[in-house]
Length: 88
Image: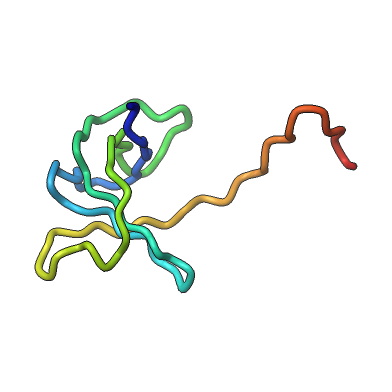
């Protein structure tokens, strides 16, 4: 089974065993970091870019006192579904 992957932008490397916790009122998930490696960004960035393999969890599963890193999702255009025309 393939593990979910997240691209994370930060100068601080999330180490295996730490948690990525999304910020926002609708956030219900958290992510346990299994592997972490630095990757080259497609566009110049102010921060380093990390490729993370993670395990999805509920936010209630994050233990108290665990090392956590916040994540803020970048908005992006949705890809059109196959068979749909643009602008429809």
